[in-house]
Length: 303
Image (cartoon, rainbow, N blue to C red; front, top):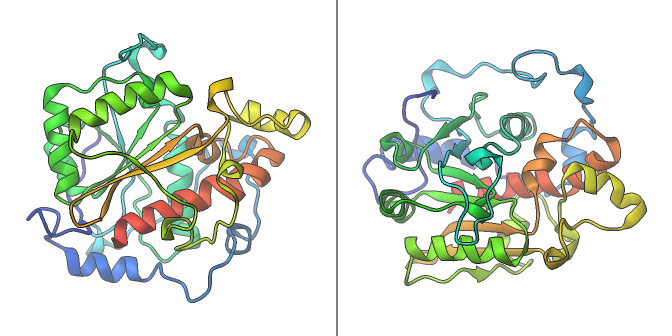
């Protein structure tokens, strides 16, 4: 598994997170724009067909990192978890559900962050177990398809420490009530005294970089197959009990958002599959998945 040296965090609660706080804040402040524009305006409205992807990065361009600031860049970290099955026995993928949309989702999102903002971004995302001590050096992490995961007791303790010390977790791509109940049970083990609460569309996280004025259910991002067919069927959900999108958050005692939960939507597919179908790119990647992902990262790094 790839290892890299540490980088700074938005919080000073932990000595490791706060070691390069001032330089990190200078970097993230560059992301703030004087006028909110659409993703299409800022990206040049470009559609990058997947057939052009031929190298080990699947065609995603690479960029140089300033050697003097090599430790002060944003790195996308995906959490690798071993368990599968959950409370309802809903498993599959041979225990590798954490690999869904990997690695293209974070390669593309990292590229878009670097391309369209002044945030300095690591072109090489990481995968990391919750119990890896080096996770404390990375202020943002991502869990995909948590509808069947089960945290070990060590993971519960470590994740709680990580989040309370200034870390941020984005949860994405799980559908229906059974998967929600499984994730709810597991996150309540991490925070028995904290409840996930609905995040209204008026919240700054939906408007801090890209002004997402869509209604909540219009923010639903399906997988590429369902999304492509939706131009004919109008269906953007993956199962009947998953028609309504839910954005929920868990905050610390000071009101800082620690966890952003995206339920009944699949932003990762919007990042990964941006080059496979132009309708899917225009309707879901460009309008919803990329703007929301960038907003969440920006909000996490500045709060």
